Amino acid sequence: MASNRSRTSSNWRQQALVSMPRRPGSTPFRELLRRMLLAALLLTLSTLIVWFDRDSYVDNTGQDGISLVDAIYYSTVTVTTTGYGDITPLAPHARLINAIVVTPLRIGFLVLLVGTTLEVLANEGRRGMKDAAWRKRMRNHTVIIGYGTKGRAAVNTLRRHELPMDKIVVIDVNSQNVNDANIDGVAAFQGDGSRRDLLHRVEIGKAREVIITLDRDDTAILTTLTVRQLNPRAHIVVSVREHENVPLLRQSGADMVVTSSDTVGRLMGLSSVNPFVGTVMEDLLTHGEGLEVGLRQVKPEEVGNSPGAITDEKVLGVVRHEVLRRYYDPTVESLQLGDSLVVVRRSATPAKPYPNFHADDDF
Image (tube, rainbow, N blue to C red; front, side, top):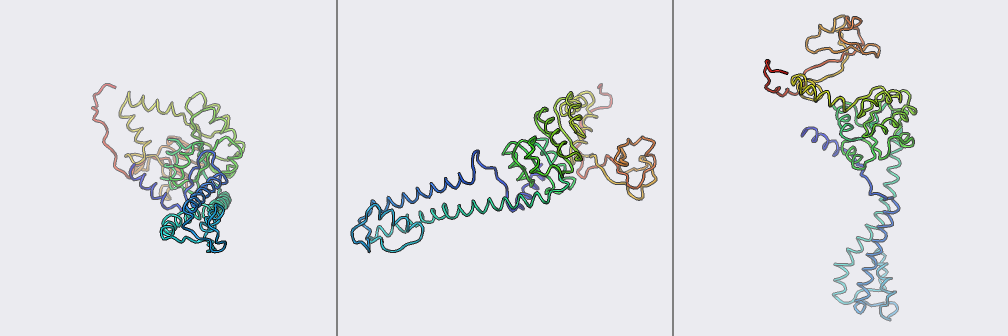
């Protein structure tokens, strides 16, 4: 866990820009208006300072004293760094106040009004150009709809299998989840994954794979239907809670459906009835814990051998012509070039010891 968190932090630091969620209801123009009001407040404060200390200022042009209009005029030309010099502080304390108080107000005014105006306009233009460039690059990518616990686990698995992070995009309705996806180095959109306009923005029609991990089964069904209509070729994997919804998901276009409640229930049952079997199953599902399941191509020296002849790994299945066959299938008794093997192999991380059960325990 610590190494994964460290890797995530490193990936985040390497990002040039991080997409942060905006406050609810915030827009660029509303943000600009808010900062303009702050700038007006600074201008008002500067005007009040000059007006209440008007006897310490001299009007070199009119020679008729400092009026409220003169105070507004002086503050305006001062905070905007125009400085015509016709009205100047004469008393030493007035000059000191200008140096200590009015000058910081002037700097704050410029930062708020001029700097942030350019920043808002430049950022919006840059974001638009980045979005257009990103959409042009998106081909054969993976779309993950829902970035909860299951969505994060899916991204971590794809990362461990060396899928480029710039080929993954996340959709989630929660702004915090979108922010977490950005920190994890993944592009993300905030919104409802069943909306067609949002799916078009993530280039769903050009995606290679779509992973749907939503909290509600009815939302998952609707999202699967929409995704399948927009992309008839993508491989769609969906997570559902209840087993009775699996047929609906398959009819909606899902290629693979994972029932989270059944899977957890079976693992708990195995762990209760036969702890050894349950421990091995948990081991297979946990990365870096003794054993792991993987997929690899047949090596040239393995061509012609049977799956059982491979000794350093245990072959569970053979993928030939995009069809999975079990290791005992007579059609794969002789491995061919181009076959893929589903294997159980030793993890690079040493395994934890199994619980201290005895062979004569009554299960």
